[in-house]
Image: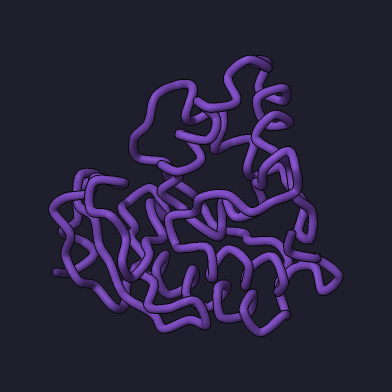
Length: 173
């Protein structure tokens, strides 16, 4: 499909290999809408219809920046993001994820505090799990208050890999 014919409700995708498996990048007319995992639960992020478009400029730029990130050449992303769905609470959590610096982690409790709802630790965990723009909105940087790795849509091995990539002195507990 030509880019000139796209509508705001059209979602385009391309896949890219990565050290954490095949990633599916999804964009629309407004920006990058998702980075999905190879074995992602289809119910985690609802996008449809998806049209393959390997030359979409947002997807090409996201792929380039992710390659740089995996090569250790990029610590921040400069992409227009479009969190396509989610409640107001989820969007607050996802915005908080974007503030976690490269090489640092936060606990679910710290994110709950940051968004002004310190009693919502479990809800923060649920929202974190629904983050559609994995890696770029760094949900992998959120860990348990005890310093242990907790659930991750891409799998625990991928989470550990990303944390090690970002902080060479990170010690898994």
